[in-house]
Length: 111
Image (spheres, one colour):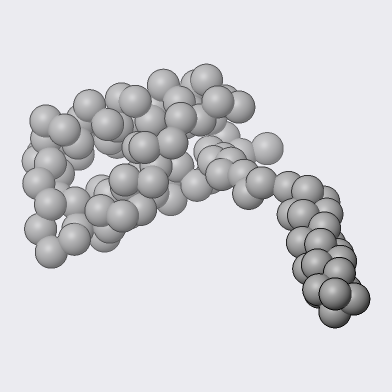
Protein backbone atom coordinates (compact mmCIF):
# COMPACT_ATOMS: atom_id res chain seq x y z
CA UNK A 1 0.00 0.00 0.00
CA UNK A 2 2.85 2.35 0.87
CA UNK A 3 4.47 1.74 -2.54
CA UNK A 4 1.28 2.77 -4.32
CA UNK A 5 1.07 6.00 -2.32
CA UNK A 6 4.73 6.82 -3.03
CA UNK A 7 4.26 6.06 -6.72
CA UNK A 8 1.19 8.29 -6.86
CA UNK A 9 2.94 11.15 -5.06
CA UNK A 10 6.01 10.82 -7.30
CA UNK A 11 3.84 10.92 -10.42
CA UNK A 12 1.95 13.93 -9.04
CA UNK A 13 5.24 15.71 -8.37
CA UNK A 14 6.53 15.04 -11.90
CA UNK A 15 3.27 16.24 -13.47
CA UNK A 16 3.27 19.32 -11.25
CA UNK A 17 6.85 20.22 -12.22
CA UNK A 18 6.03 19.74 -15.91
CA UNK A 19 2.96 21.96 -15.62
CA UNK A 20 4.97 24.65 -13.81
CA UNK A 21 7.61 24.61 -16.57
CA UNK A 22 4.95 24.86 -19.30
CA UNK A 23 3.25 27.77 -17.55
CA UNK A 24 6.59 29.50 -17.02
CA UNK A 25 7.65 29.09 -20.67
CA UNK A 26 4.28 30.18 -22.06
CA UNK A 27 2.74 29.50 -25.44
CA UNK A 28 4.83 29.95 -28.58
CA UNK A 29 4.12 33.17 -30.43
CA UNK A 30 4.14 33.61 -34.21
CA UNK A 31 5.07 37.26 -34.64
CA UNK A 32 5.58 38.48 -38.19
CA UNK A 33 7.58 41.66 -38.70
CA UNK A 34 7.89 43.73 -41.90
CA UNK A 35 11.32 42.24 -42.61
CA UNK A 36 9.80 38.73 -42.60
CA UNK A 37 7.11 39.77 -45.07
CA UNK A 38 9.70 41.53 -47.23
CA UNK A 39 11.83 38.37 -47.42
CA UNK A 40 8.85 36.16 -48.22
CA UNK A 41 7.54 38.48 -50.94
CA UNK A 42 11.03 38.69 -52.45
CA UNK A 43 11.21 34.90 -52.51
CA UNK A 44 7.77 34.82 -54.11
CA UNK A 45 8.90 37.19 -56.88
CA UNK A 46 11.99 35.05 -57.48
CA UNK A 47 9.87 31.89 -57.67
CA UNK A 48 11.58 30.42 -54.61
CA UNK A 49 8.76 30.68 -52.04
CA UNK A 50 7.63 27.26 -50.86
CA UNK A 51 4.01 26.40 -50.49
CA UNK A 52 4.45 25.53 -46.81
CA UNK A 53 6.04 28.91 -45.99
CA UNK A 54 3.28 30.62 -47.91
CA UNK A 55 0.53 28.63 -46.18
CA UNK A 56 1.88 29.62 -42.75
CA UNK A 57 1.98 33.29 -43.76
CA UNK A 58 -1.49 33.26 -45.30
CA UNK A 59 -3.11 31.11 -42.63
CA UNK A 60 -2.16 33.11 -39.53
CA UNK A 61 -3.74 36.53 -38.94
CA UNK A 62 -1.24 39.24 -37.97
CA UNK A 63 -3.10 40.77 -35.04
CA UNK A 64 -0.31 43.00 -33.73
CA UNK A 65 0.04 44.96 -36.99
CA UNK A 66 -3.16 45.72 -38.95
CA UNK A 67 -1.20 47.11 -41.90
CA UNK A 68 0.77 43.88 -42.30
CA UNK A 69 -2.45 41.90 -41.98
CA UNK A 70 -3.97 43.94 -44.80
CA UNK A 71 -0.92 43.09 -46.94
CA UNK A 72 -1.25 39.42 -45.93
CA UNK A 73 -4.91 39.35 -47.00
CA UNK A 74 -4.09 41.09 -50.29
CA UNK A 75 -1.34 38.53 -50.94
CA UNK A 76 -3.83 35.74 -50.31
CA UNK A 77 -6.14 37.21 -52.95
CA UNK A 78 -3.33 37.72 -55.47
CA UNK A 79 -2.02 34.18 -55.15
CA UNK A 80 -5.52 32.73 -55.31
CA UNK A 81 -6.04 34.29 -58.74
CA UNK A 82 -2.58 34.80 -60.20
CA UNK A 83 -0.44 31.83 -59.18
CA UNK A 84 0.14 28.15 -59.69
CA UNK A 85 2.02 25.71 -57.51
CA UNK A 86 4.69 23.66 -59.26
CA UNK A 87 6.89 21.19 -57.36
CA UNK A 88 6.10 22.87 -54.05
CA UNK A 89 7.03 26.35 -55.35
CA UNK A 90 4.60 29.16 -56.07
CA UNK A 91 4.81 30.70 -59.55
CA UNK A 92 3.12 34.04 -60.24
CA UNK A 93 1.73 35.36 -63.49
CA UNK A 94 3.12 38.68 -64.75
CA UNK A 95 0.10 40.51 -63.35
CA UNK A 96 0.61 38.79 -59.99
CA UNK A 97 4.28 39.81 -59.97
CA UNK A 98 3.32 43.44 -60.61
CA UNK A 99 0.83 43.39 -57.74
CA UNK A 100 3.30 41.77 -55.34
CA UNK A 101 5.97 44.33 -56.32
CA UNK A 102 3.53 47.10 -55.46
CA UNK A 103 2.87 45.49 -52.07
CA UNK A 104 6.60 45.12 -51.49
CA UNK A 105 7.09 48.82 -52.13
CA UNK A 106 4.21 49.66 -49.76
CA UNK A 107 5.75 47.71 -46.88
CA UNK A 108 6.79 49.86 -43.95
CA UNK A 109 10.53 50.26 -43.45
CA UNK A 110 12.22 48.39 -40.63
CA UNK A 111 12.89 50.36 -37.49
